[in-house]
Image (cartoon, rainbow, N blue to C red; front, side, top):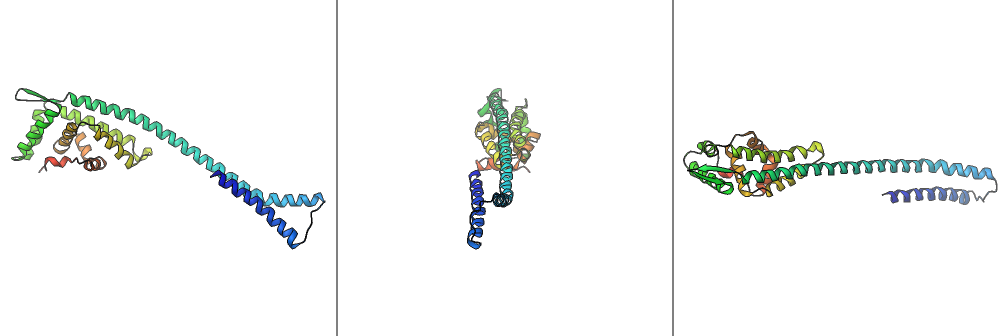
Length: 236
């Protein structure tokens, strides 16, 4: 870009000199003068015409330089925000995975953990829904007497909220940025945990579940990956 304006300045210098020469020699049949005063007048003409043009180009280049510097500073700040965000974001995903490893429920004297516990809850949802789907929330809470589903739902919600707030439009990010990290969150989460989160979104009225359910960007990404919390049936 700078080279283009240097070229433009060189063309301007050439044209100013060429126009003067054509006008002086061709139309007036002039010859080179030995009088210094005439050369002073030529210098005044040359400088008077070129100075505004070259000054304008110089000012434009200075402004352009400042804009590029500002953009570079903004890119640097954005990079710092991304690094700080990712440190927090991936730390929460690790905590979420550890929390799900410890997830358990009790049924008939048996302790069911992690994926096994989720499959049991899904079986109970299927069994109860054939009779009275409105009883499902109470059944889930009965088996989850330690509120562990609430804890896991909140962990997932916190991870989602980090994306929602840290990568907001106000902070210079876009919907596309947020959707990318929602994809990361979903793909780095255990599939059984995701099913448990969807059960929470479908049947439980926790603040975290409500927030996840009402986040259209997250739901859009989930649907795009073949996940839909409505798969567990409609509530009356």
